[in-house]
Length: 219
Length: 130
Image (cartoon, rainbow over all chains, first blue to last red; front, side, top):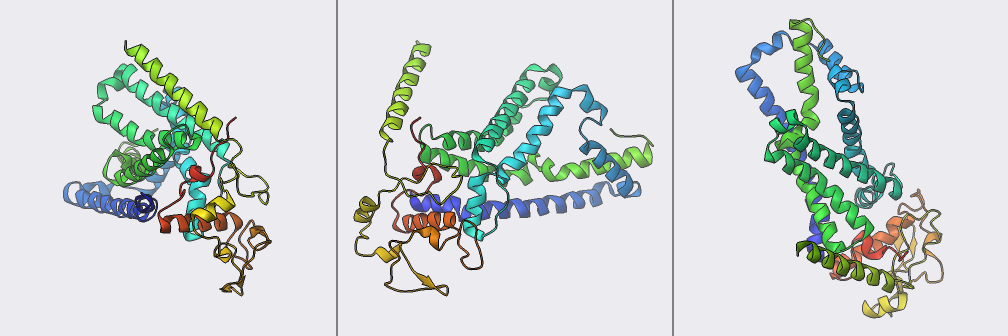
């Protein structure tokens, strides 16, 4: 049992990060290959100016018109995406495990802060799930896989929350927590989670097309 | 029928957690007084019981080690002085291993090696009964 825990909390963490890292590089290479094969003409209107104009416009909360049309959804979405990154990176237990293995260390939240923020993340995910069932135009676009992806994101947070409070089956919850976290990291480059690093490029393309071709704003 | 089963299972879970919490009272813990704002309960640790189980009774210096100029002095032990006398709260040039890391590594590395004992956060930092 100890050697299994040692493996998933040691080498497997680095293996997951490597798969994530090389997966991202692979996805970028594949994207540029695809552009060169099928849509090389986009370079005629790709523009740095319009790319960054679009990226920055969409970074400002509630500047784009569509975000103002669904303020509740976008408020939750903004907070969720921020916390999804911030909570795991600034979690005391994570920071000290990294400090113990490679002597790097950075800011960490108090445990009670992380605890509350984790609940915010979990409730946001429940909101996204309910939205896919309740809102007709979203329901129309929803596939079963959408719920599976929400579950994959939720699992590390739910197991982490339950383990932190030591409600039951502590060791198994930590094992499930570690494995689900690693699963998510590995899946990021190869699933729609890739919008984590692809989103700026989607914006750059749309921004360039709207700016250079249609002479219009895209927000 | 199903609802009744659910309630029954939840009652059992409630009792189990209540009793396990009750039994955790008055367990001896490691001295964490050097930490100003400890975020977790002090680690569960019964010195004598641990050393009996781990066959460490004659080898105090295994944990109570002495380092001079970053070299381990063999067979010399530092019992009587507390860990925080050498290990600062934050790593410094004098001692690169801060107190928290020293505690964690001293316990976990040995437990992993010997395939015995607690290795996960909450297995030592057990939440006390409220």
